[in-house]
Length: 205
Image (cartoon, rainbow, N blue to C red; front, side):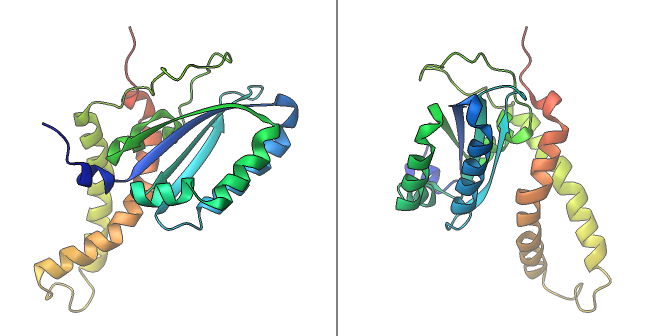
């Protein structure tokens, strides 16, 4: 079955970037990366980001950022601010490649879980692919492990609130999802995926 293009365009998009930098200019690179995160944070649809080095003495950096949909991502990627920021890094970024994932699978890529393998420092070809996402059943289990305790705690906390139990079910569900969705997105799901990174990682023979 072919995916609906309109539906795909409205899904969150995770961008994973691999950059090779000049090892003699690590402090500059650190400041440059953080300034880019600060810039992206001001754009509508920005959902979060992170970056790690493959090892303490490695010149390979992994960066990841996430936007709410293709439109907000493209607004950032084609912005004059991002263009100026990239130009600042031309002196110490040797090469770059990126991959995108849409929907919830982006949360299960290795960069956001914190599990970054040591990569051969030789430049990678454009044909290289991101590591495969975990099976859907593992993703479902991971989401449930985060959502169940959060929902349970929220239910216990709200039950004593005067008038809460008298509200219509649809209104209680609306309030619950409005409160818990950002908690799951920004804190709980990233924490759970980091905690389960060994279990989520594809097994190799």
